[in-house]
Length: 168
View (spheres, rainbow, N blue to C red):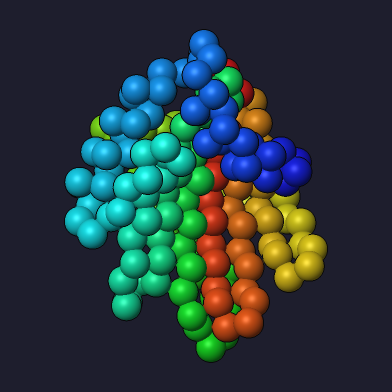
């Protein structure tokens, strides 16, 4: 299942800028990116790649991406230097914080993604895959091709990523 996310993310910008007839409104996606950068101060928008990046001393680097031409989705990543990896409870708490902050209906109309992800984590309704220092918590839902939390700790950098790809 994780294999679907990598191509999705890698092709997101290409699909959005291909100039073909897209299923999902590219102008709306650009508006989401500029709006979210303005809503949360300090964000640096990259509209062509459909992402915004924030960097702070206390929170590290947070990246929000949203878009797609034929497959719509969103990925949020928080990376920061830490001496030890976050615990699973800390990873889930950060996933909750990021989902509630960025996936609200007034930003990307992804309240269902937030609700489904949090219910899955809180109810232990997820699968766990551990490979090469990565831990992937996948929440299964018929509404999403992918809905997950990923945690990686490597060389003193702790990274938590949440993502969804709609099944619509």
